[in-house]
Each structure stands twice: as C-alpha cells, then as structure tokens.
Picture 1 (cartoon, helix red, strand yellow):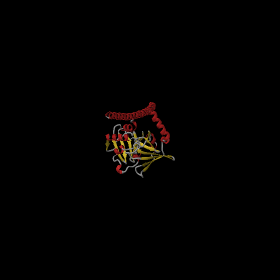
Picture 2: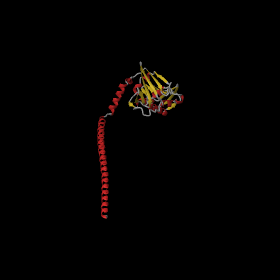
Picture 3: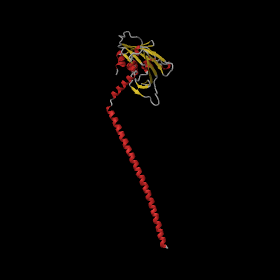
Picture 4: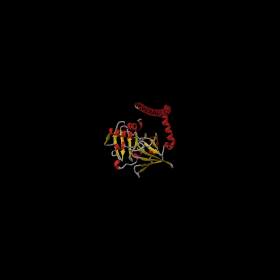
Amino acid sequence: MNRKLAISLLIIVLVGVSLYSYGELKEKEKSVVLLKAKIQRLEENNKKSVSELEALKKKLNEIQEKYDDFNVIDAFLKEKREIKDRYPWLETMSWDKMVIVSQDTDDKYIFVNDERILNHICDDFLHLKYETYEPPAGFDPDIPRYTYTFIKGDDTYDVSVVDRGIVEIDGKYYVTNLNVHKLGEALMPSPKWNKPGNVDTKIASGGILVADDGVSFSQFRMQMFASMLSEATLLDRKPKDKGEKKSAGTLFSHGEEIEIECYNSYLHITDNKQEYWYRFEKAAFYFSHIFFGMG
C-alpha cells in the first residue's frame, strides 16, 4: 500500500513538473516570437531611416551644388531686372503730377506740381531693392503712412508706404529707400502740435532738398546739415560783404519751404519770411559736400 502510494505521488510529481516545464517552454517560445517581431520592426525602421538619410544626403548635395554656383550679385541683378520688367513705369524720369494721401487720416491729401520734385522722384527715391513679405502679425510701422499716386498722361500708379523702408505695389511688398516716407512728411502739412518750431529742427526733420547740385531725400544728411548750423555763428544782421553766392536750394519740411543760400563764409536761410544769417568758413563747400559729396 505504501509502495503504491509512493508510486502515485511520484507520478503526480512528474506530471506536475512536466506541465510546469511545458508552460515555461510556451512562455519562452512566446517571448522568442515577440523578440523576433521586435527585431523585424527595428530592421524595417532602420531600412526606412537609412532610406530617409540617403534622401536627405541627396537633397543636401543638390543644395550644396546650387550654393556653390550661387552668386549674390547675379541674384541681386536678376531680381532688379525682374522688378524693372514688372514695373517699367518706375523708369519714368518725369511725372506730370503726383498726389500724396495720408493713410492715417481720411481727408488729408495734397497735389504735387513742382517740376523740381517730379523730375527726380525715380532717381534716388523709388529705389526698389527686392521683394519681401508681410509678417504673420502684420506690419507695425513707427512712421506716418502715405500713398503716392504718380500720374503720367492718362496713366496712374499707386505706391503705398506700409512700414519704414517698405512699400506695397499691386499687392506685393518691396524693400526700398528707408526715407520713402519722408516725401509725404516733407510736403504734407503737419498739425500745429506736431510741427517743429525753430529752423534747425525743421531742417533736421526735413524730407527733401532741391538744390543746384541735385536732389536729396536723405534724412541723415538733413540732420548733418542741422548739426553744421549748430556750430555756425548766428549773426544779428546781414553781413556787409557776403561775397558771391555759390549755391542755393529749397528744403521741404512738414509742408513748408526753407530757402538756403550758400556763400564762401556765410549761410542765408529764409523760413516763413524770417531771415537768418550764419557765419561759417567754407559754408558752400560743406553744404554741397554734406548733401551730394559724401558716400
């Protein structure tokens, strides 16, 4: 009886061990299958990554080849030619008339008929450099905005100042002369609260100088000339022997005209019938050098 019991217990133990071993084997087989599947996925991902890497290398090589052949001057000249072909009217050297409209007010506009200005607008003023794009948040100008309408015969062309040195033409934006807004600021009368007081400030904030030597739209040069005045000696009367007049010009500032006459040692400035005489050695030379002789 004890022997039979022992044999039975042994059989039970052996069966239990066999079942346990079988279950463990199944678990191991399952782990092996999962590992093989994972390895296969990794190999597939690796092949995909290698393929993507090769594609990126190819694209990089193509970009590098284009970059090696890229010439900044050629690209710049090409875009200039494209702009010229797109807007041939920019080459117009003389306009019949011009209208300036303030975008900040609904009823503020002026007509420009001065040939001295109309004949020089495109020389240095409308100097489109290259196309640009509006920022996602839009433009945020720190300058007054104007729309310039150029008129030649029956044709009209609009240029809108949307930001400092940026204009819009036919829905496209272009980087241009940083002083592009100064034309409107120079010719459009300002409200009294925003109008410069003394002649030095008017000159420093001027927008156009039309002189014997040419036309300047440079605010930097206006400020340089105003600085020159601060170093000159303001006289209380007209000098007895002022000498021969060497050059002259008209500076436009906030809708006003300031007349400037240059002599060897004197400057004569007329602002709203108020006359100012300054003594400054080589006045005519420095006047011409500041506005037209500097690089």
